[in-house]
Image (cartoon, rainbow, N blue to C red; front, side, top):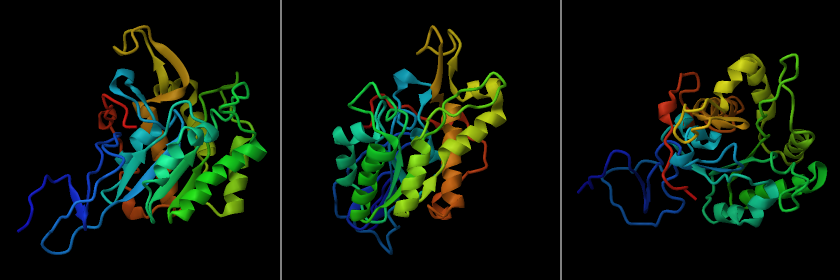
Length: 287
């Protein structure tokens, strides 16, 4: 007899996989259970794990409209792929490992899954030895752990250079802020044969198109009283509000499609206008 389940559930063999509500990972591990379905079962979606920092992490409702690009990425994924966002605010490639987050991912990731790896903002903090890495040496060494260990599990690592901050010269031209880190990641990707999304370059191009004033709607530039969570307003040139996170996620998803890093059947809505209401902020952090 066919088991009746809500339409948002997908079945494969002995595993029940529940896709996350947009921007929220509902569960980071799923217990096996026996399920019998008449006819061939639907293929279980692959998982796209995200290891990164505050620019990609998922934010709770008390911090809305602050949004990470990893929180927005699911709006561009079809039912064939599920995002599992393990990005952590304040993390560097080093501290993410030291905190056990890479081990957590490695305990879950399966052959054929993907691991998006994006660090740089906090690796730059030379004043903090718990996070700092040197671009040509320790930064590459820590990133290599993500690559080598995920590959050992049969997963597919993809490097993503750090998204640019909102910085402009007096002439109104977007200014780079990540020093030697993007180039170091590009070198590592070439040396190890890893797909690379150059988000540093694509975000810089986007900020130049939008200009000094236009980029304010992407970042956390909020007027006093505009949002209940920020009664005094805020001017933050690093973190995104929902619109900006969606547009940065679009850059990543489009590059994944164009480079063939993810099958095109895993991706959708790349040229559509996505309303900010597509983002959901959980009441508690997913991890």
